[in-house]
Length: 431
Ligand SMILES: *[C@@H]1O[C@H](CO)[C@@H](O)[C@H](O)[C@H]1NC(C)=O
Ligand SMILES: *[C@@H]1O[C@H](CO)[C@@H](O)[C@H](O)[C@H]1NC(C)=O
Ligand SMILES: *[C@@H]1O[C@H](CO)[C@@H](O)[C@H](O)[C@H]1NC(C)=O
Image 1 (cartoon, protein in one colour):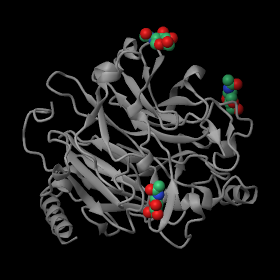
Image 2: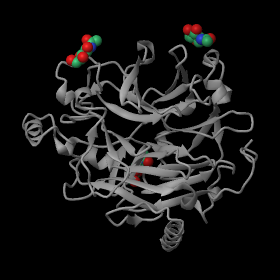
Image 3: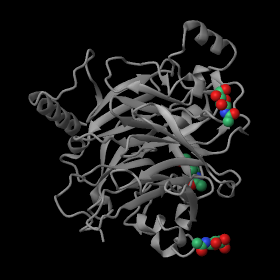
Image 4: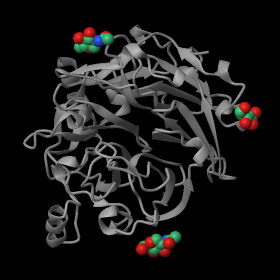
């Protein structure tokens, strides 16, 4: 703990000297160095059109505060996007924003792009709005790619009210510009498309592909925007490890047989290529594949040897949720049974001596669920922690802060740790 605090004090001083410290009306919440807690909530509330709307939504069950769990996040410009899947009754909006500027402890969420896209206000749902969003990713052309499962009340009595789809928003105008329905032949019984990453290298995004994880039917779906086509890889490395499917945290024991989930794209290498690192949620291992394989629809049946095991196991309690890589090639990932954020410099071998911990906290980092790196000049790693297993096991304590959005400068976060990059050509050590 001591080393974290010293490191943070140094970083803050350094930023202050350069006049870069974020102006705030509220002192920064630095309970988990090197992370700053931007927001924390006991329960999630929304900017309803009026108090009367809020009261009515509570009265008729469209808004049940205890059932609203934030899951995914994305950061762009002055805003942060938060997803809230419709797992239980009473989720009035499934995608929302908050400002990045902070200054308030627990801001109300603003439905994105507005209330008319959300179920509480569109009773005759014809699937033109949003149903239940898990995760999302923003491309380098200012567009938000939203993965909508189309299913409601998943924990009570699942109803597939709309087909699973990708919905794309233009963030300059906050309007939907496309909706791609995932073809039925790729939606297997109990498929759960839970995570999406966008890969484009051209400035105009004309080469855009999306990689989408099917966590329960162990597939990797690829979408190519140019001709709106989909194809699907399956592989044994997408399966959960039975020995890692037994979770224990904070005295709670549960079994999840979740397959491929974490997806992280490397920066471009010397050959203008990228590697996709991936792992099953119920696994202590990391794997990788060259994206040139994924982008080739002709390789779906003959690429088994292209998906590869990376280095060593993370060891017991090494289950990892989401992961993301910054421009220096450092990966950050949630260690859900260790209340921690892990790190690894992708140029170094994936071995225990090279994988580190950026932060650990048994209060603020209970189930770090989503991890993203933003696109600013000085990048930050963003974490959303949400106590998901406790939410599923019973109501969360309404008097406790259950959900947090935290961030840390990616360079400062790994300074002095085994993840601090040594300047080398990308992948020099790796291949
Ligand atoms: C769906 O409903 C919305 C709002 O009622 C309406 O604007 C839109 O035209 C409808 N779309 C279709 C395809 O019927
Ligand atoms: C699962 O974890 C619990 C708690 O740590 C332990 O008691 C149990 O033996 C484990 N079961 C298996 C099959 O590993
Ligand atoms: C892959 O195999 C499936 C099932 O045999 C077949 O339908 C499909 O055409 C094959 N795709 C390619 C690109 O070879």
